[in-house]
Image (cartoon, rainbow, N blue to C red; front, side, top):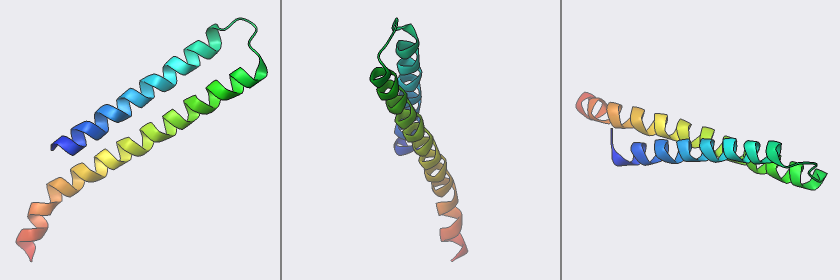
Amino acid sequence: MNTLVSRLRADAAELAELAQRLKVVAASVPDPPPWLIAALAGHAARCTLASTHLAQAARAANRLDREAPRSAVLR
């Protein structure tokens, strides 16, 4: 596994953790205003989406890394 894949996976995990923390913060605020709940939920959703995209990119990069030598040999 190359360093790009490792970095993508680490960033994906970090964003997933941030999304969880935002959800915890939103749940722990007593009587929060609606705009705060909406803002925290929106940020959590964007972090989750970004985490998913980074994880997909890591899988694709890993697949390309594994397949590149084989495709070069086949030519």
